[in-house]
Length: 392
View 1 (tube, one colour):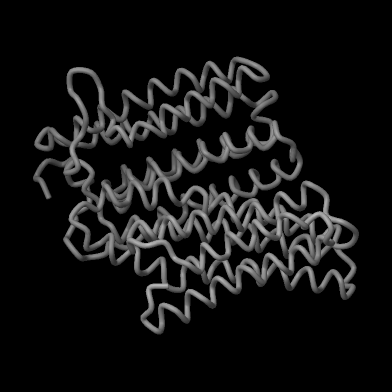
View 2 (spheres, rainbow, N blue to C red; view 1 turned 135 degrees about the vertical axis):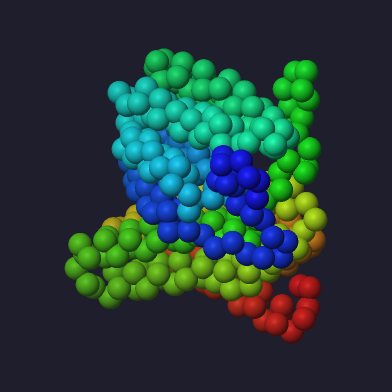
């Protein structure tokens, strides 16, 4: 630690030692439980090509503001009062952001944009002001990040003022700016790009933060399953759909947490370049994992409400697309630290693609049972193969 009073707000990173997630961070995450629920419900209400594009933009924004905050709280110590106050202020912005999601492409667009831009730029300025002059490289990194986020903020606000397709296009540009900025290490004219050393993080903490967001997404799925089932008559068909949906969520938990999450956390903690690995594995590759869980929750609600008959396009797309996104994300996430693509996950992806060919001929209930069976099969295959020491 530095003797500078501002420097005291930084975490002390001890190699191979895991800093626990603080209660302030967990409290902050509650806002994003609501945000994930809003995204799920918005997708269900606007399940068209245009609606899916709009919800994708909103999801990418929600994920990015959350994961960027996790980077900030990995560098700064949330046990310090100023950092806690930052998180509480971010909760206010997050609630404005979340409540605006259903009508973000209607009358609440400007509110969504202002909340998002304020959260992103505001916390980066806080990082800059909190960094002592004795850490010039960290201060310069904060300036680089602020420059990129301020540029994207222009497009967010402009999109909030625009309407229709123009809003979608401007917000898409803003997201492109933000998503490519870490990949180019926040390069800015004259000062260039940041170095790998500027991205030193506490790996175990970052891994735990992202794992907790997976729990948030799975928790939202459980809420959807329970709330929908509670409103139904308990017929044999409905009970079977309820059990299938719950087993599907359990299988997703097993695939992510049983072996992968802990192994990734350990690998990240031991890495000589934890910032580079965290950028790929946790900042980018967790997006399809979370998106897959959300889309699967939409499918669960559709199946529970209408288990019989033939599956329509909305049901097929969500029932197949959700697990497909999830497996695609998890196989790439695990490859990033294991160094090989797992055959079990690849087989699951192929099985889902095959199922998609005749999914419309199946009832929603049967489609749910088969997708759940595929996820359980992937979980069991991985568990037994890794337990026996095979590399699949």
